[in-house]
Image 1 (tube, rainbow, N blue to C red):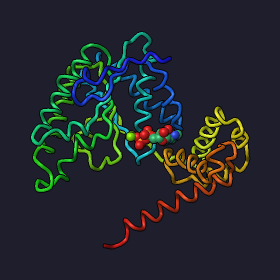
Image 2: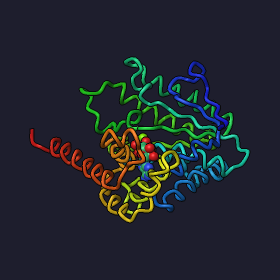
Image 3: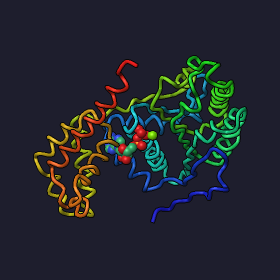
Length: 309
Ligand SMILES: Nc1ncnc2c1ncn2[C@@H]1O[C@H](COP(=O)(O)OP(=O)(O)O)[C@@H](O)[C@H]1O
Ligand SMILES: [Mg+2]
């Protein structure tokens, strides 16, 4: 059993979806499940660790760190999983450090009643996050941050209420205040649309990492790990992991994100009622067909969106 301490809903401050004590093996498993270049993971972890070793000791006039890391990339590339997994790894780097992870739900703030978003943002940062950071080392996940820090330069005043502009202003003001007052705080932001995030927010990030689509080798590892995981429940699937044809399958996955690859395996399991009833009947051919089918569906969708109106 993991030592999870998740606050009941009514005790959670507004805008905070979840508060967890760290480390947490379930989060650690997320970190391991994302296949990216080892150097990228190491870069990410090092920046996060440096935040807690150095930021409280070196004046911001010397190194102006904000304690913000940004993960960008296409949907399904593992950003949220990496951010949550990172929290576990950072906590493990400081044994006994009493770290906590706060997960923010930006949509709940942005959808606050008209005219209240700015207030909700200010309360979240100046109260909830600041209080947590004052109590001990804290990592905050700001998932899909474009909702909160929308690029003011691209917002038209007709289409967007002034509230959205003010929410971005409030986020920036609060980030500066938190950076100044709380060195034991790390904010990990993610975005599928970094071009929609305000430039001033981006410039406050200490590290911006773009998480790429998996290359062929990574595709092979994702498919293999997915099948190996399934083999824990359906041992008959184990024989596929070592099959040389798995490489053809990986080649067919190139261009897909990690989420699509894992879902493709589920599609293959659902390719006919017999396999769905008995997943041990899964074949490489079914995996190949499923991968091709995902590409086809995407190509169709793209040609529709690109077609002239
Ligand atoms: N590089 C990857 N390696 C393995 N699994 C991946 C990878 N990228 C995404 N996934 C899987 O896809 C799913 C979605 O990941 P998520 O972290 O929510 O992506 P994002 O936040 O970028 O949309 C998860 O189940 C994750 O395990
Ligand atoms: Mg995500």
